[in-house]
Length: 585
Image (tube, rainbow, N blue to C red; front, side, top):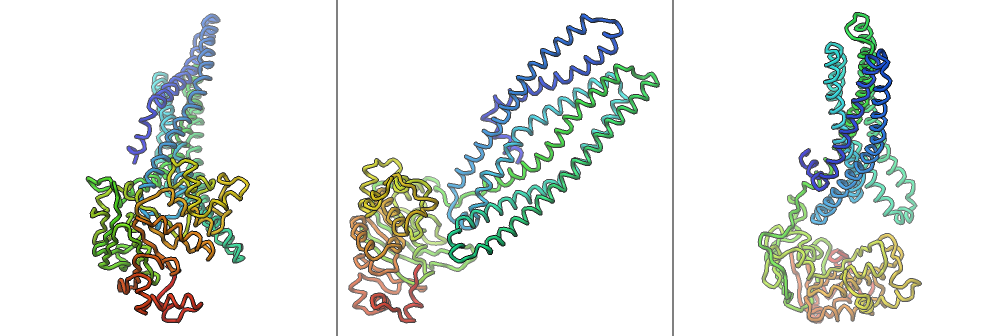
């Protein structure tokens, strides 16, 4: 883990090295002053050497002035290095998240993932800046002080540094418990962020059910767990800092008492004792920095652990070796003996399922929930991989096609439309980010949303709100359809694409969808059967597979499940046996 952490310094090695060099020079300045004090007391004052006293004082003043610039450099550019490392980590983590498949996001809360991108990495930033710098300065001060003090008096130096060893030993013993508490804090912080994201996103639902008190109670439990974890962390910090402070105070006291005894015995003089006391004052600061660093390291490494935990998740759906670009797509789709389950040990959603869709044909899938209609639409663009069997496009296994080119040639409109926070233009252009404004307008016209957009004060620059809250369900659906018009793919997948439209809008847009589907391979998943009457073939699916297939007229003449459902929808009621067989996917 340390190796992974250190490699993020490589792009910023020059600035990081300069930071350490200047920090080293600043530590050297601090080591000079006690020796100057010793010289003043032992030599310059007794000899009344005013010339050298003023000369040395002037040199130290100049060094202190230069130290101002050093402090600025370390304070500013040291934090810049930490922030750039955080930037790199956040970039890598977000990029890695983009490679992970749907199943990963099915099993991880959005709020927790957001916390790993923000809160966790903020802790890492402080560690990245202060960690190496404080460790380096502290070691320089401790080693430098030890070397100088040994030359002054070995016995007193060993007595004083025995307390340093006790402090180090105590810190090591406390490290494990502190790491455990900081891990818990990071997890509970992620939990509270997940709870907040869920509650705020669902605020309209909670208000519609008058469940504000219920949401407050849910949040209280998560918030209380977070409080307890913080209290445990503060308890560990309190024990850690108070114990170390005791050893430092004992070190200062012992240096005063034992040093005084040494003066009485004539083993050191007053100048040496002053130098000792000054060095004690100087290197208690780096020791305290090391104590703070240990605390900071536990928090920062807990955040980095959570960072690497995600980075170590390998995507299972990737470009295979020798994957080819999908070009000049005709659009023939073959599902050959496909078996699929969402969980490794779960039940099969599809079992030995086969289906062939000819180029340019429109196929509609209808049937009860859970028989795999939507699953088929997810398997073709490889949002999930088949458990067994294979899916071919123009005779090429989708696993042998690059993901980018595969999905670039498939347009998907789902029932639950997602709107990004931004303008209507931004959301339509998502289908083709480099599209001209004229192309965006044309796509909106084809989706029958242009007139509504122009009725708004800011037309295409109107904001849609968080997840499109300023738009109706039908308006969001039509914007999603406009995205696909703009993308203009050879293969279309429409999963309840008109479900949110009223009858008038449905009729208005149906012709547009049919125009878009011309000469393209199209899969329509529908519950409202009026939207699929013109499909080339309708497949009636049940748990046992394809129960009926044919065009609308042939299925009506067959007077089977499809015919009974169709008649029931238009009569305004659904018999029990039909209702049990057909539900909205």
